[in-house]
Amino acid sequence: MHGRLKVRTSAEEAARKKLQQQQKVKMFRAAMGRILEKKTAQEHDAEMMELTAKLLSSNPDIATLWNLRRLCILARPEGEDSSAVFDKDLGFTEMCLMVNPKSYCAWHHRCWILENAPKADWQKEVDLCTKYLKLDERNFHCWDYRRYVVEKAGVTPEKEFAFCTEKIEKNFSNYSSWHYRSKLLPLLYPNVEDPSRPISEEKLKEELELVLTAAFTDPNDSSAWFYQRWLLGYAQPELDLAACRIDAMQNLAVLSFSKPINLSTGGYKLTVSCCDNCNDVSKWMPATDGNTFDTTWTLRSAFNIKQDTNPGMVSIITPDTKELTLQLQTIQAEGAVGVKKPKFGYEFGSAIVDVLKAQLASCLELLEYEPDSKWTLLTAALLMKAIDRRGYHETIRQHLTKLETVDELRKGYYLDLASKWAIENRLEQWIEAGKLSEGIDLSGLQLSVVHYTSYLATANAINLSENRLVNRNLGVLRDLVFCRRLNLTNNAEELDTTVLKLPLVEEIIQNGNEQQQLAKELPTNVESLVI
Image (cartoon, rainbow, N blue to C red; front, side, top):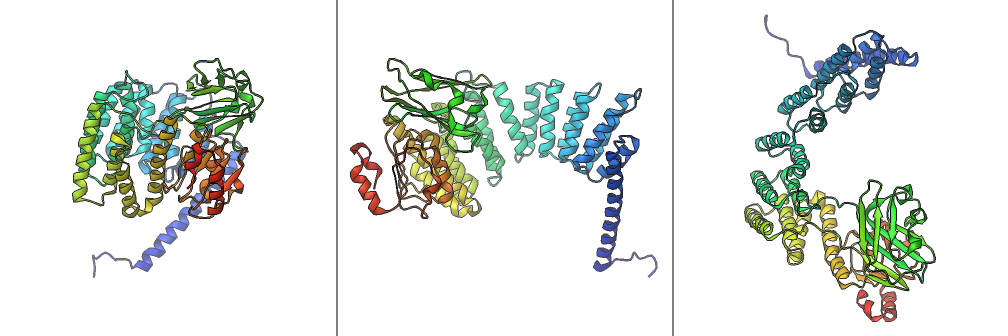
């Protein structure tokens, strides 16, 4: 029996760990109690530095302790070598990052040190990031820090792009590197012909080929698929004017945007060429009571429309001096109206479309072997939409419907995506028809949510019957400022429309009898809205 190590039983091991934990808690409480005493007494001295270091070295995520260390550094005695103090704390943060490389507090404190130190070696920080990213190439904290220090160190975008490429080639499953790449590409390969597009057509072809290689290496990894979405233009829309309608008969005007803004800040300059008393931004109010930021803003006033204005334009200059414009399609004594067609994605040239068609063929081929690959199904749908949104509409819907089963945890996402794309087709047709004050038919689309409501703010009637809307979907309908008749028949549940406070609404339909009655009352050009 001699010389053999004693193997602790599970009960003994649990008791030992519990005792250790109790001792650690006791020591932590004692140290924290002393720190709070010194904080109250404003004793930012060497003892405070020692106590905070003791606790942070085992748990670097206590923001209060880092704040106290900063106060201690700022309160250091006169004559003390400041460079040595800052260098010592840099070394300490590096030790803490070895404990937890993803500590927000430790990375933030390191930034503070470098910003306040008499002299900072920014290139050394770049080298440190390279070292840490070798240990964990997906540490997004380190990637964020790297973007910060390379700017300070003056590292060229070309070098950083090469670094990103190296990391991606080593491991395609690197969200942060793909994201960094998307920030560098517009700097290195801008689209001179179309500034609204991030990169040139030639470079776009190369990137599409690279991302396809990455995606097909591991079809179940999402990082490359997400990057492809950015290449195809499926990012969040930029701020832009969506719609404007001025009705001199109703003394009501609406101005809507693609994203919520705060017009009341006073930093915006508005010019409506056909209506002088529309230009005072301070008089516009959000469509939803209590909102500070809103997509839709209204104005009540007696309007005098200048019919000789040609072309009629709405222009707004943002606080960062960016100008947004919208052309008014109709200008009459009774009012003016204009709706801008949203960007549903990039419109590619024939060379890029050929590449997308080849990628779609590859996706469809892969689906023959892996028919339930969710990322391939979704990407095939995205490619079809980029190639020919209307022509592939039914096939796209089939892919999204299958995804509801294949990836059931994200069923709501696919329902919402299908709703958004279905509305895009009807919205585009409505805008192209040019009757922007009349009704729009969104019935029978199986909508689970209503997108693009800011573009519908000028419509007199909206038909949302035969969909899958529920009460939580109704909030966005507050943007329908000029809506007089709203058809909500046959949705997923009986909808509580009391939350809607539309200023001009005359009738909201939720049953068949009322629907038939409305069909007789509506003028011919909107009869198709009611089924």
